[in-house]
Length: 430
Image (cartoon, rainbow, N blue to C red; front, side, top):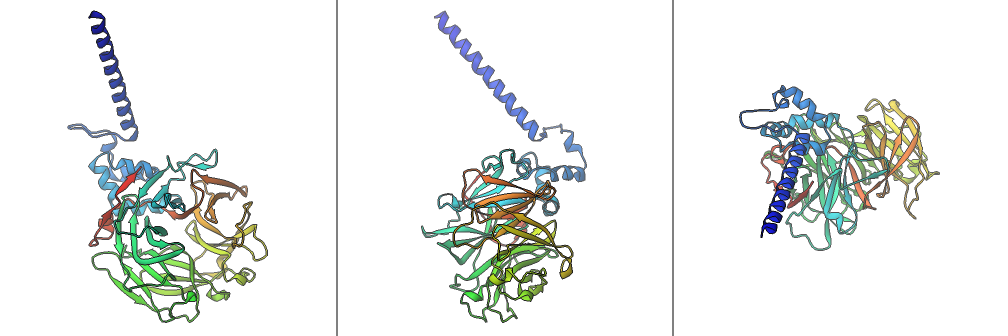
């Protein structure tokens, strides 16, 4: 009996000791994330002026910032302020929003923090350096339909239903993957053809987001079919804009910069190569392309893609007679053709899929200044501009994927799209 009592006391003491250790570990982890305010007492960091606190938060990786929302109401209000989102986007290095092409994993989106990932083994772990979002939109999609990642702009993304290789634009979804919120946008026209290109833009002055549905006239659409524009928010709605150019062509490889959606106007005519759409004023205008692109224009611009590097418009070009080397042009002064400069010629050692056109997509600049590039939806590599070498990265556990440039936006869609009905993703994992 005494032996049993002693055994119970020993187990009880061991259990209490283990519980104390676990509690101590939890307290240490909480202190590492951020100091916690208690009744009648505040941590030293909470006494800092709001401007200094904001500056500290702006320097953190976005996954850490997301965790900081749970520290206290003061921190939460700072992080949800639209001004904080604007400041963070202005100084944050490039990250990516990623969607696997596997049918099972396609329901997930990964906002990947590239700066926090361990690049020593050239692998990007989606388990440890990403915010994962599963969208269950309750829209009664058919079993064959999926939600496809279409565009990204200022921290919001655009999703569209897809069937096989075609986009079904009957319903579009503007989402904030960080908060797990989304708005459903239904196009003004019924039975839109699959040759439309939905895109997302932002107005710097009014700070409104707009959904733009471009028409790929080369694929069979009526030449008189206009471009439709939807403004998110209580006072928003649909407007139609007619394209004045009579060239039948398709809108491809769009990129957003300074309030303009830029795209390649797939035609072997130099002056018609690059166009832009002014999101604020809803007008089309040409953009002068780089000189000396005659060889690449033989394919109607199919071997080119647009991107943004250091706040400048950039163009990646595979020469017509070379599928292993591509050139990167940068427009140093926006709108001035003579400011286009061929900055780098990059050799890639990648197997190109049979019957495919070689093309690299510029994702953006990393914090260390390297250029992040996506090749054929399965290879991601970074180019060191100083020593002109490439580092190839594999996405852990994902072989084929769609990736877009992405900078997190911590503002709620209820603020960004005030007046819209806002839904929440059914499941989020961080």
